[in-house]
Length: 464
Image 1 (cartoon, helix red, strand yellow):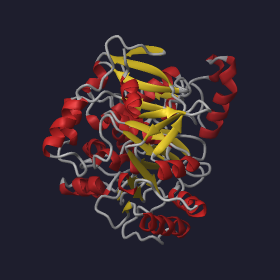
Image 2 (cartoon, rainbow, N blue to C red; image 1 turned 90 degrees about the vertical axis):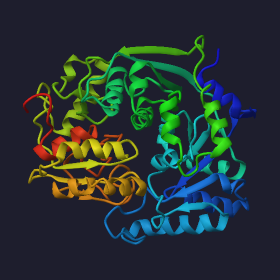
Image 3 (cartoon, helix red, strand yellow; image 1 turned 135 degrees about the horizontal axis):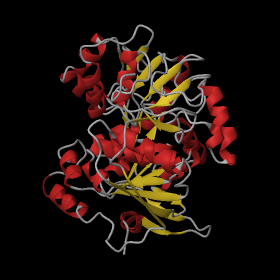
């Protein structure tokens, strides 16, 4: 009667502390340039070493410039973070994937891409979207800055064991509906705090039909559901996707690992604290309209009227409409935009770029729009260029960037201008997330690409 989460948790639980939290063994620890400097400083001050530097990888992603020809000083405010990350990695014997590495990229993109994360493993990361690796059946453990030090020093993390939820996605998806549309729909359907305190497992025929990179998108935004982490049971698609990757097991070790992964699924009689399901057959592409990921509507839909919402939500909806400069009852399609950003740990993998390129090929970005594509990793960038995708984007008037978080995190100086409206493939649309006064609409790469060409949010199924 074990769930997938139970099986991974039980294999890694070391013991329970007096405060009720569990010590959980960490198979891989991936840290980034925003929080690594503080963690390295704390280790020095306390005279502690890194217990398993061989199981830890540092990356530069949050603070790096993504402009062509970048250096550590392209963004002056980022230079100290990058220098301290490099120095700390060298001091503590941690492998660094910096901007001079052919494997550099966003932490949640490179972890599965390089097979640092593997099915059934625990992967700690000081970032709320650590759950992304759940798309291949790994247990992502998000840590705070202080907890990074604990993991570095002990190779364990102290966690309260979460409750468990299963969301079964039934039906079939229309050809133009993507994993991003799916997770936006789920968040809009149940709300951005519905999974608070839970580990979420996605199941059902829609999930099984998703490509592996789409599953990562689905798990990535468990955070925006309020969940602690997300999981999808690995299958042959995952095994095939991981085969031959840089850190994947080889030879007999691969055969043994693949055999072990086949048992990583929830038992038929497993019991969840909450068990939900929804039919996705009629789903259309979705986009957010407000300042919360739950403020979402289908591309054929209308901006909601707060008067029709529960009394407790009306003030928040009014504030969102005021910030976004939108009127209740107006179609979301046709809304003029200023920028498009295709990137982030949610939607900057090769398949995402292929989807966007398929929309823009032979067309040009509207004269009123600035559009950019930032690959999720240097590997993705290299593979995209080998396919000629960069030429498709550049010829269409897009900027083609180096790998990094860029406009998603908004901590490296790459952001929009006040008053700009952006269609973005990122995971958060909070007020000011992509710059003070910037209005963000979350969407899939295909929807974002279509908006860049049209100069407005466009319903590709309709005529707007």
